[in-house]
Length: 636
Ligand code: ADP
Image (spheres, rainbow, N blue to C red):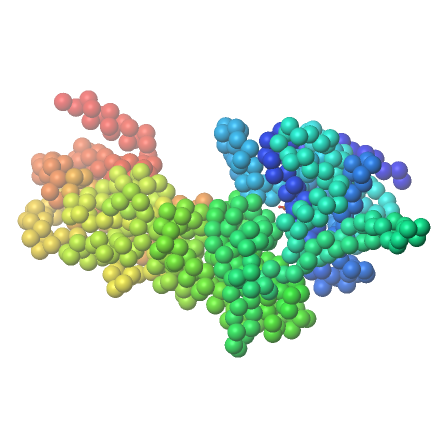
């Protein structure tokens, strides 16, 4: 059946990315090759992994990546015998960008009008393939997926659309032919000719030397003397393939570490920290781990739960994204672990139950936490930036991981009412006035709303600092952390917080005298809305506030769970009343005079309504509430 050629439009985001690539003034264009080699290397990993389950896709020959430059036509092809792609996969992988958030990022980039950020874009969104368009004005990708009979040809000039058709006679794997742009000095590139043997050798050595598969190229050499002289073609391997992690730390340059990091992480920036060590003793292995500077958008994807650490055994690649090597809450850490004593034929099942791997995981986790603690000490500013990116992920560990809770708590940073810059819990405890017995926090979606909260009044008046928690994970984490350095941790809007000293308590009790009937009456009026009405020790300026009973779900947690589409039980909250507030005294007078009159009932609704409004929460019957406010305004 003759195959049809379809012309398809790129997704809008892809068009924008391509536009940026083509017109960018980014000078370091040679990195397109690193990206293509990286993709080829990933494809070979994937094929090996798949072959473990399905021997029919096993590679018969050797895995390899070939560079095929053609000087005459100025075409450079990058060919691999990896997993290949089906037609659907080509459309999904090469025609669209899955990451949400690309759009905003693109808008931001355009606004700044700078191409210096291009690497960040490419790194964050996994759009390495498109960097081909920095050097080529047409790209032809031919691919056949392992296990499939026929292949696919994809072709584009980077101008908004691409064509796709069936292609017969292809080997399994992928070949990417770049029709190189004419060389031009003025566009900022170093006048590289990407068909030149020496240029290609240089680029491979610079960026991809440690790639574990051979990167091959046919080269022509003259052999023999005089009349015997002839040109022969030889296949040479351009990369040393020496795994970086097996070399001594002292012999590895920062640049080499950085290039290796970029290869394993698909990131384009330098790592924030490199952790390279060799463990000896009961279990022997080498680990080379990196902490990234910035979070990729992938990390925000709640469905992404894979690690970024690859397991090797005696230099042989065993498993990418190995979940047994680092806990989920370190999923931003990228790198490799190479074990000397695991058997080479470990299956995935054995990995899961392996005691040895569990030990390695523990040690790696400790190493990463130590590195983070050291950074917190010596590079506070950098750490604050890192924390913005990865703090929410790390805090998941406090909730999930009993083993590292305390250590994690020590490296957490929190916003507080006490200072503009975030504080550690130890700093907070150091700053506590003597009379403050507990660590207090308030949780909610926004700092600005929290800062306005009535719950802060008494704490503020006493000079007690309060942690302001705005990450979704915070309240979950704190539920697992009842104390720190012997100080109880308490939510200011939950349970029975007592902030008063003896004198103040006496004063409050004085004020409460004679108010019990009022409390009972308010409770009767609001029986449908609140579980209890009681006197408060938290308030100074506001008449009332709502608090959550100890064992109930806070509105903040309920909101987070609802957003995650979980069913949430709704429990009534407690209304706390400030016995010293004039509004309360006014209500007492009204109650003394009229009992539970209609007006009294209205005032109770207004009291409850304003407690909600103050929190930024919706009132249950807004129309009724608005009417009551109007009525009040018309009263003289
Ligand atoms: P990234 O590699 O960061 O995901 P790319 O734009 O470079 O982003 O590639 C997109 C996807 O296309 C890859 O994730 C992979 O699934 C597929 N792909 C790219 N190159 C190859 C290749 N040589 N062989 C098989 N699949 C590939």
